[in-house]
Length: 144
Image (cartoon, rainbow, N blue to C red; front, side, top):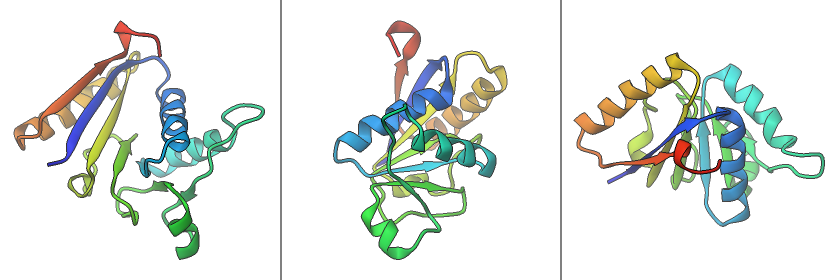
């Protein structure tokens, strides 16, 4: 069964997500990031400019087959499905339609955006109602 982890009280949702992706990039995990088109465009730019001397190589789900095969990190829209199905990072508002195909789903929840928190509560309820065990990571209790 898919593991679902919520990362709560995140001060900078996309900044935190970039650090999360970079950590996985340095390891050997395969990661898919799902979001709405405007968020995905912004996040794409952020990954190429993590710092003045660092970036996270990635591609989009509509890239060539060769690029997709070589990339461990893939950005996708809600209707797309990547080749690998290890970890899915959800930056969208809704439960990803493909979430059960992944070993693990990570949900990132803003500390300051009330709308984002409300949408996360709805996603939490959806997963819980379907019987998934939910793991909580409260970032207000530790440094981000």
